[in-house]
Length: 273
Length: 273
Image (tube, rainbow over all chains, first blue to last red; front, side, top):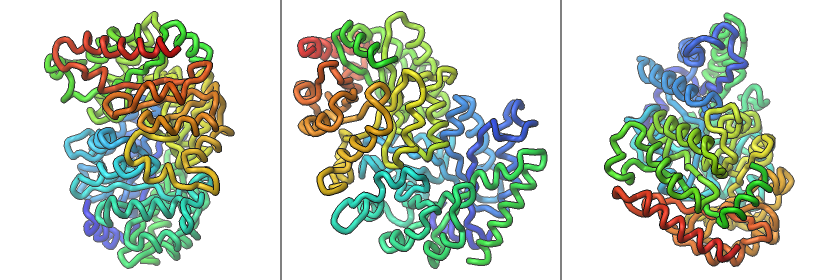
């Protein structure tokens, strides 16, 4: 999906909500836990319930890999379903990959190649290994690399705020240096909602790139603050909620409750747009 | 595998060689490319040919993921085969994972859990997200996290050498800070052979931890230099070669040639031990 297509989708749905499909079998509704394809059926129900309120879906690979190879079969079925829908959605493999150049090429093939098992629109990537670990993800037409800049967790303070040179912290240096590796048509950044007050500094370096913002909801980030400091003329934000939507209820009404939570966020977003 | 078991294995085989199983179908011998289970059969032949000269095997996940779900089936068969052998080998999932705490727990389950599909001894992890992204990998008894410190690629110079504080570069800060997250029984570090002259600085901070050293061979690193600066009383090194061994020949003699290359490295290692 190109940048313009994403912007059009955001305007059409009046939403920049991303739903995190972080499926843990132990948190799924009881009636789906032992069912064959239970994970896919859960995702399908969540997608059907939320797609009018959301523009993006973000499965975190860890949750699927933890189920073994069968988990990846469930992920593939989920992606096949998303691709089959008339309603468009931007898809994010939250995989936090990255390796030396020839190896990152293989990861890019795994997740972004239209002939591959998943055909995601984008992939999250860790920056520690530098240019050649990131650039292979920028070569697929209409596909995106989403680089970790400032993450939402406590461990973000261990390295990301270190004074990387005289004037910049490490996360700022990552933003600045990586601007040479891609552009606003193929590169986004992860900036945690729990650090919304940092968005002013982020926007000073990357005024136009889309930001993927996790941490609203269960992790305590505020949508209002994220919008105040991060919104651009083109929106420029994808705000993710995972647990707050998909586990709004663990009963038979999980999909209806997910729809309600997604709808609440969509209304707040529509008011801002 | 515990630290003592690894040290015993190194002494017994007089080797600290790790064979990188980075299987690319396009580089495999022609007669295996179209065979069902060709990737597994290739790995099996490489393992059989090299296990008397090597103590560790390191499949890089990217190469398997690039083949889609079928690639992971081939990886599982490879791991099942390694677990079935009488001859021990330390296994490394070169996956470079890492995410917020509850998500890293899922990755740990995926790769290290004895009940999981793979049951690896260890996993490579990227440090950017800090403590809670790394610690979940240290809780499995006799299993290891192998943290990226100084990587072998050109992109390593983008961030890893930044002056993280007055006296330390970022990779040194990663080594120093992470010493609080694990110990020499459950934490190793990746230090590229292409930066062997940096091993003195690395050893000043982590005198006892094992180091996984990629980059000998195809990437140009020198085994002699790595040993000069990195070896400890307990060996303390796992030196990886991937392409130099597994693609020593792409003909019918690929396994014999792999054995020869592994044997050459083992002899150099035995001379040092």
